Image (cartoon, rainbow, N blue to C red):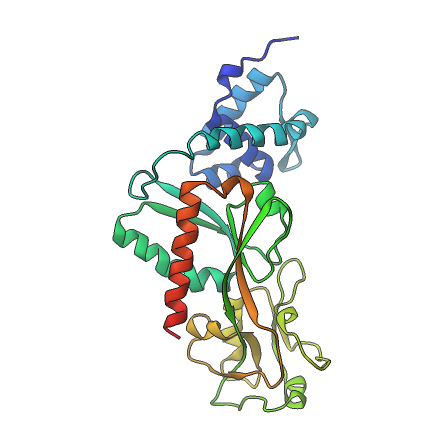
Length: 302
């Protein structure tokens, strides 16, 4: 058996291997890593030679991992976590070097928090880059498989290796076009109204956040859309209503009238969630602190 040249298995190559394994696309991996496709292909060729395995083979228009590549997933991730741990004792300065974060969030959380936060970073001279992926109702594997470093969600995943932190509590509000209609004033008017539902790719509806003290049966939505940004065009000029976080009035539904829902609901709590591998990472800790401080400023301006 050929002896593996372990000295050629550097951290950058291993990270590239994991990214291709997660994306199942050289093009997708290159975009995620911010490098060219040829650079990814070159690294894969080097790994194939070192490991004596093709790692990925073509199947139709895509690629599939070999059994060897699948078996290497967790050992490679463990090695990268160990390498990362070697740097955790360093003094962290956000003004030194470039920072890159992949964050899972729906468009509401993304647009509420991060555009202004990025502007603050740019004003301060922090070289930070954000990559956002949709979260829907996120699973813990998003963090365990390092698809993202942070999740911002109403539905934080749970597990012994997952950390959570509450960002804020909000109330549900009923949004509507005041030039066309008024707000529902009773539970009966609410259930009788035509409404817009946000339904994520995993079939989780935003209306699952509505907790009713006494059971109410909603009719089928008049419109179902895949994200919060799509609500406003349907709300404008119509008799439809949309029941969302009251903070939507600061972004996606700015300019529309809103009123409390006419029945008792639970608080709508937003969380951050992250994997234990990032818990003591200085850059990750810094980002979490900045997000919390920024959210406090948003809440103070309500």
